[in-house]
Length: 248
Image (cartoon, rainbow, N blue to C red; front, top):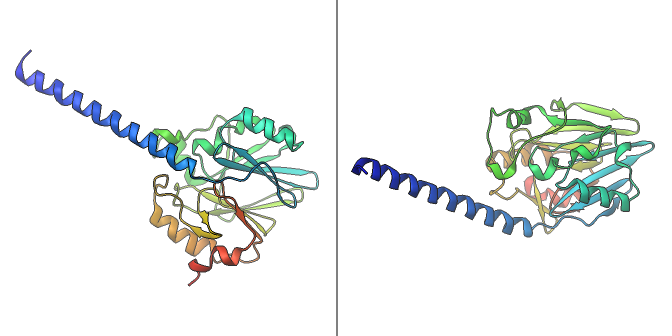
């Protein structure tokens, strides 16, 4: 083997080893961080609001009158189906699924809701069509057709009114959803620690600085919110306490 070819071969091997090592380290760190998360157990959380636990994440079901909608799609359709059965909720009755973003742990079980329209933020589409890339571990993809939401757009389904709020940072197209002016579903826009809002783990964020601006300028100023729900860190019924540090 010629010296130049041999050197190139050795360099290629070193690069492969480094890449595999990096991916392995990231996977280990990912698993360790998800184990620190504290989603709610499956059950009723507030009037008309149900949490469904799937490993380290929650999806939420909102029921009012004859209408049922879901926020996010969790990880495993089998787990979600079993948990919904405990709550006596029929997936076929769900009218809409509102996705806070398209990371795999928020969309993988969307197919469980065959009659539901699926909604995503307009800017999130670039993670689905390849215009923007995220680490493979997040596997941003959707097997269902979807409709895109604009900031401030309102969807009314019977007695349920959902306002879409663009909250970039975790991903460019992340959205929060304000239901009936009092229930705020934040996905991964923020985490809760000791009842206070903080940015989500930087390991998972695409742009934490933007997320900070989002929380301070788009979420903390809201008024009339009674409950704040997160995808991985539970909920709070004290909006003022959650965002006290962000309003100074």
